[in-house]
Length: 219
Image 1 (cartoon, rainbow, N blue to C red):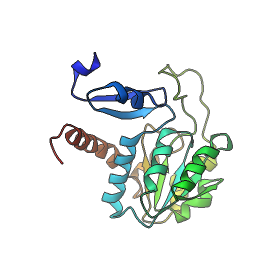
Image 2 (cartoon, one colour):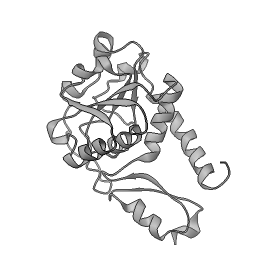
Image 3 (cartoon, rainbow, N blue to C red):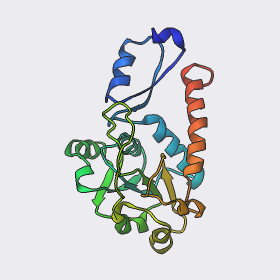
Image 4 (cartoon, rainbow, N blue to C red):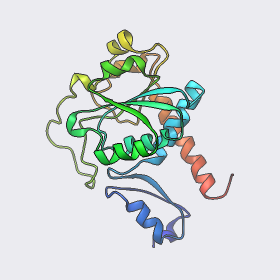
């Protein structure tokens, strides 16, 4: 039925693998816009495009990825960086750390990575500071209204204006898929490091380009 509604189905689903299953049966293209804890390929295409625009390269960079390593964006950025000469420092709470299965995949793909305990430990080496919240909803469930206090982000998983001033490289950039919470305070917005507004804009043009490509309007 959905095939008759459009030429492309852009699908976000709480169940990991749902877009891949839909693509098995659909005669029109399926674009994965995020599937549970699985992957988020269009977000990471946007991230890579933003980094290339801002830094002029995707090779030879150090990434600090902060957040819940079970998240789909973290999976997709790990897979994507296997195609480039990059190193990744993963910073997350112990109960949100890289799974053994995903670490095995990264090693199989020859991704250079390490796990560290805090942003302060890794930020000095980072060209790209890639952030997600550690206080967040369960992406394996359909959307529900937030209730109660979600708590605050522990200091070791935050990137603040003071930390950027005192520890970060002067030319490093901060990315965040948004919305953000207290892991990235709003006073970072005015710093030279902030690139998440440009990232958000680039998400529009990247997805326009992807639709044009999928529909055969461009090569």
